Length: 167
Image (cartoon, rainbow, N blue to C red; front, top):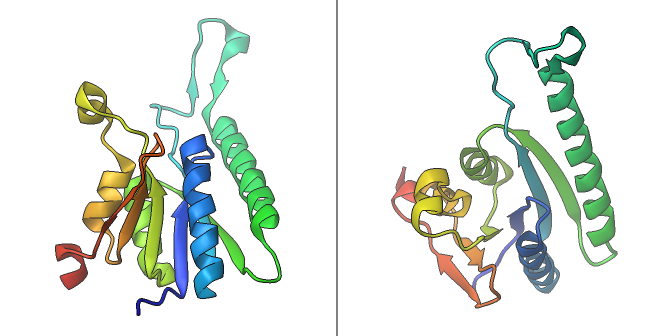
């Protein structure tokens, strides 16, 4: 029988992510596993410390904006962790900064995750080519099984550890 002790569920706070969290919570309760909810904030990258908007008083404070995003993400994660926690479920949170696909796969290993449950947003065609897929990156690089929850509610799929697990 497969046993999960630690389940990692990344979120972008979208509805599809909420579905993945519900599944992760259910499995964590069923297996008596620890559930970690994670969010990753991509750094705001702009050349120089500010953007000049044309008028002297309209410079955009990039560092301040990044701090605001991180603060809001941390507050949202804390609220979500509190909402999910119960006597029967240990929930922890993790806020990362970087490229989501890379950060999620790296944190899964650091956390010792037995399973990653991640939502897909159903991008295809040129949007997927242009923006890539965080879920796809995690599936290719994580060293543990990855279960994807499809946005349209059409079910889930599991990718067992592949070549990345053999490193």
